[in-house]
Length: 205
Ligand code: 5GP
Image (cartoon, rainbow, N blue to C red):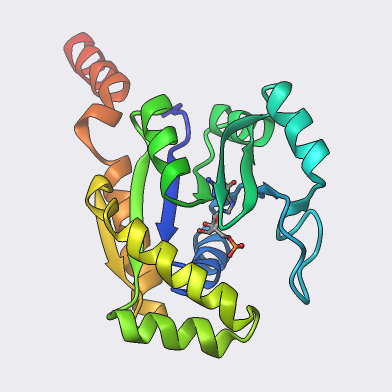
């Protein structure tokens, strides 16, 4: 069966553990992960080309001008964008590609790729979310506040997603997200070509 890959969009509040969940999905199930470009400064331990392509604002603007992104957005004063070439190449090769992006980008993707599956990850409660963000220790308190405010804004768009998964237990969350993706890939409308071929083959027998 020769199929185009699925585009999988994973969003969630800052601090919910998206990065960890996505890494596990790549490791355990072999999804392709799109590496975004950003103008944000690298956090300790982050590597250019692995975690993000870290860009100056001028370089980022240049990439926008050259249609280098399938989507981009501003999140808490920094630019983030999904490089076009990797995604298009991987989908054409039949690979399932994960984009770990925020809400505006996700809705933009849904407009351009109606077949994309949109999954929202959340913590079990708002207080748990704040605890994780503070506990991570990578942001100073002012940034934590901004990110919590942004989470409150983003919660308004949660119902634009098709699936919501709670990240309480990591292993369970990874399994649940994978189940959602597998189910999406099995939908009748995603398999029209295959079904028509089966029908034709059966009739020819
Ligand atoms: P962080 O600074 O914590 O790495 O990311 C901040 C937010 O930007 C997260 O919600 C993350 O999902 C989102 N993000 C990362 N890359 C992209 C991207 O390419 N496009 C969009 N729209 N959002 C992104």
